[in-house]
Image (tube, rainbow, N blue to C red):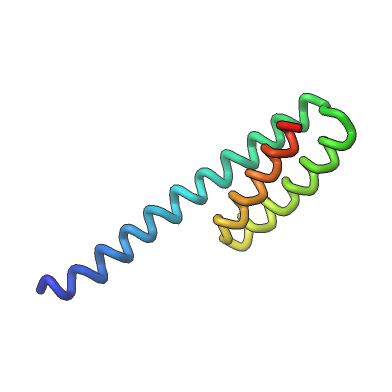
Length: 80
């Protein structure tokens, strides 16, 4: 019985982690959009648009880790 429960627990934990990543991805996209509304300098604006496009594409493809990478890149562009 215990052997049958272990795979089920692993799948449940993986699903919860992916849900957290999906939520973080959506939050990151919202943050990038909010920063674009602030009308940043042209170089920053171009970088934010590029990273937003990548993040949205990865969200659609359910590649949440790559979406989060794009969000991190956008945050780095803002820090410059």
